[in-house]
Image 1 (cartoon, rainbow, N blue to C red):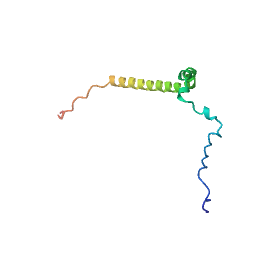
Image 2 (image 1 turned 90 degrees about the vertical axis):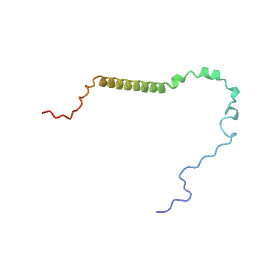
Image 3 (image 1 turned 180 degrees about the horizontal axis):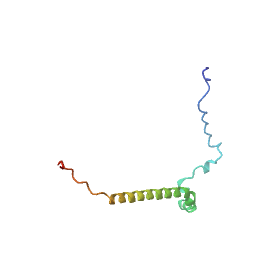
Image 4 (image 1 turned 45 degrees about the vertical axis):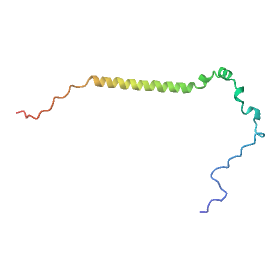
Length: 98
């Protein structure tokens, strides 16, 4: 067995970040200042939240229904079992019956 090549690396080299002038996004559109952001306009255009997250909401509703059903079934069975408890056993006596 030969030792591995000395230049071999386990991970690929990390690419160096490009300078901002060479990037595809113009520098003035990278980040808007806080005063330029109109929160009311963004809230008005963000009406698709329900459409984007309906799967997550449906999953949460399904889990909630399942938990409620299991809890109700367990409570029902437990209450039925406690209703029909047998009478307590008589106290044991040490007297020998002849």
